[in-house]
Amino acid sequence: MVLSKPDNQKVLSAFSLRGKVAAVTGGARGIGLEVSRGLAEAGADVAIIYRTSKDAPEIAAEIAKANGVKCATYQAEVKDQKSIEDTLIQIAKDFGKLDVVVANAGIASHYAAEDVTVEQWSEIMKVNLDGAFWTAQAAGRIFKQQGQGNLIFTASVSAILVNVPQKQAAYNASKAGLVQLARCLAVEWVDFCRVNCVSPGFIATDMLSVHPEEWRKKWFGMIPAQRLCDPYELKGAYVFLASNASSYMTGANMVIDGAYTLP
Image: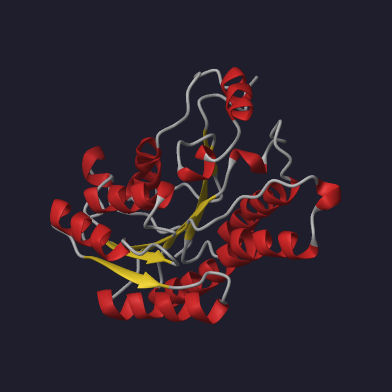
């Protein structure tokens, strides 16, 4: 049915993911790792999809033990349409179904626009936009067959503003495209799937730790909250979007940025 309506539940029950199966791309590090943990803490069985994280199996074992859920790992390349599609199909077979897919895998780069090479532009688009679409497409096919599903993209505040002092036109464009993609899919797939985005601000992950100190000082001066966000502070938003608590929410972009985008 159009935007399937769950039964009325007590509010804490509406946030439960018990009995759900979720898959997270880039789920073994950074934001994706905390999303994987958060979904498991809410009761979901979780498939962690990774590309290079060698400790992914150990992470999955820890998550499974800590939360009494099933947690398994799958290696895939989101840039490769067949790789991610085959992986999601396998996850649905192994777990018996697939309720939630978080398209979280992403990379960042910083080049002056006039110096960006064809290879640099192509790489960031292949991961951040193409990879997200291939993940969504594969998930959408499964959800359509099942009659229901839930897709969540990790976008960025870079989709709605221009970051300074770093120069990252390619990254910003990839994330802006991702937010518009989510809106389009929310309408196109409304009969069988909800689609939403989370757009984090500056998050304390390895992706940020490599940047010059002067950049970090500049950012702190622009964030009213005067601090970075720890990745674990995002997991509640993903649980909300994955659960019945957000049953009438689709096509939305949740900005979580310590008010960075407001001034």
